[in-house]
Image 1 (tube, rainbow, N blue to C red):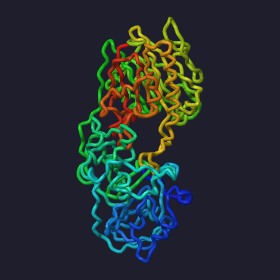
Image 2 (image 1 turned 30 degrees about the horizontal axis):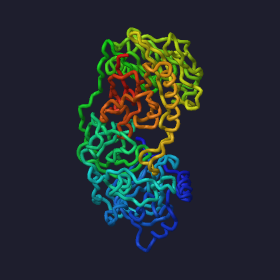
Image 3 (image 1 turned 90 degrees about the vertical axis):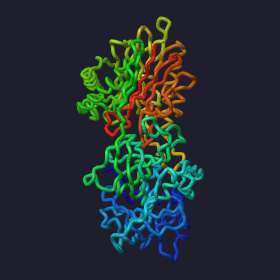
Image 4 (image 1 turned 90 degrees about the horizontal axis):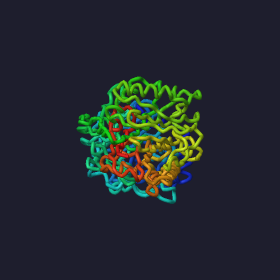
Amino acid sequence: MRSSHPRSAAVAALVATALATGLLAGSADAAEGAVSADPIRIHDIQGTTRISPLNGKQVTDVAGIVTGVRTYGSRGFWIQDPDADDNDATSEGVFVFTNSVPTVATGDAVKVSGTVGEYVPGGLTSGNQSVTQISKPTVTVVSSGNALPEATAINEYSVPAEYAPAGDPAVAGSINGLTLEPSRYALDYYESLEGMNVKIGTSRVVGATDPYSELWVTVKGWENTAKRGGTIYGSYESQNTGRLQIQQLAPIAQQPFPVANVGDRLTGTTEGPLDFNQFGGYTLVARTLGTVKAGTLAPEKTKPQAEQELAVATYNVENLDPTDPQEKFDALAKAVVENLASPDVLALEEIQDDNGAKNDGTVSAEQTLAKFTAAISAAGGPAYQWRTVNPEDKKDGGEPGGNIRQVFLFNPARVSFTERAPGDAVTATGVTKVNGKAALTHSPGRVDPSNPAWADSRKPLAGEFVFRGKTVFVIANHFGSKGGDEGLTSHHQPPVRSSEAKRLQQAQAVNGFVKQILAEDKNANVLVLGDINDFEFSATTDALADGGALYPAIKSLPKAERYSYVYQGNAQVLDQILTSPAIKKFTYDSVHINAEFSAQNSDHDPQVLRFRP
């Protein structure tokens, strides 16, 4: 089971440096002020901000009841003072980091001496909040078999509607030094319970069980509900305060973690310490785990295109290469045929080279594509042909050695591909006129591959297709990932989304190319599609659509159906199809077959658009 990275001296040194520069907003004065003749209690350690006033100080005989013991990953145990103070901003629980398997048991009354510290899961550059802890502990068990402090109920009434306070501009937008307001802000509320014994009642699953044995629920069943049971992330202000990650304390070998899909329910009471980790923030680490009651969610099937409709789709097939098991090829192929109704043109993202992640200079993907198209035929689909441009080795990002790229599949019985001096990895396709109409200089060709926006990123693939005598330009994309962005639970509020700058430049490049086509023919049928790696409300999408050149077709759907990906319990848009002004009437479908399910063939849902050119 995945857990926070082990605590280390290096991390401690980083935290000390951060404190010196004010990043973690602690102070020696505050620490000294908290020291008195009275015994130090847990709420004294936690204080009223995210950073302990006793950070870096030794404490002696801190009393509490053990509420949970973790024997794997970040080993240690949680203690809670059953005699709470009257300040809701101060947590009564704290994690004791032992580094080795703890020798205490749940229900033990203990006294702990050690060093108070602030551990930042993922490191200081992650932007994550810190976990207040006691390390290098000396533990004395006073008695055993004690009743646990009553669990604090987390529910729709207790979690505030507002997500987080605005960060302090004086410290780069950090909220670390702000006094917690748990009745006003959801992040402050969760932080005020850090390390405490908490519980939830029956809650809807909004993020399926993942390979790391964790799932997401919402305690606010009404909050931005998706049509199929998830929770929609529809703006930067819709963080969805009711989301909570669920793990379990019991090792997986001892107690298998339940398998759940979006829309299922985690019934009964789930109870345990409230932790914070780098892979989702506040997490209920269940000592007692509720029971999953399965819902009725099934993978969707889109409507087949009519005879006179062109169906164009996009699908991120998640690093597909010939070393993958045949079962993956067969499952993806079955989805193309049965769930996507064999679209006429299918833009694929993350097609790897012929030996996958083996880093030996191979760039051809002929074997990958032959294997995939054969699987589609075997599943009853059309005999797809393909067109692509091989990337330069190690120049397009993605898994090292994998050389991912976009590929067009097309059904030659329904649509033809217009070959025009096929381009290579470094040659830009341009726009010209042929017989009075817009045409590409290279088809297939890459859009503006020398633009710095595409450094270490996938270059767009453009191609000309003809359907029932009408030309359709299709531009397949896989924009830069969100890697490096801070999570919603960052101590910077709003979080720093550093990856957006590159996608904005990429969107501007694609928008400029589309405008070149429209300048030659304002009625040209242009589709821009792929894994845009950004939301329909983002600056990236706005830049793609700039000047009315394109329309994000997913906006034609009701808000409760706008998503292609589920991340940390938020159903959100990453995959898109955008249309030029000539494409006035269309039907759009985000075909939900992966993102909501524990068993996935890819982590993305494909998108399909049907129209009559």
